[in-house]
Length: 111
Image (spheres, helix red, strand yellow):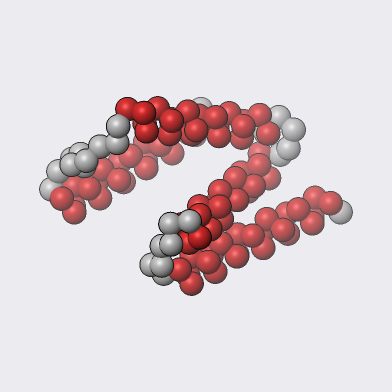
């Protein structure tokens, strides 16, 4: 839990500093509603619970590598569902590199 707490703290500090530099405010002007925050919190909590459960069966390094599949899913969702085109070639290439790495892990595990 300490690792997760440090990760969230670092992300919060970085995003707060970024908001301060771009807007001169410590908090964003618009905030999500309570339902959005609740659903997001539940999803993040369940995702980490699944990761911790998977670490009971697989080595931790392998589980963390598999969590990078979320990067690929987020990239594909942004391109195909939300039609985001900013640096799409670079993002698609990075997602392909992550997929290749995951395939290597899967093949290595099968051997």
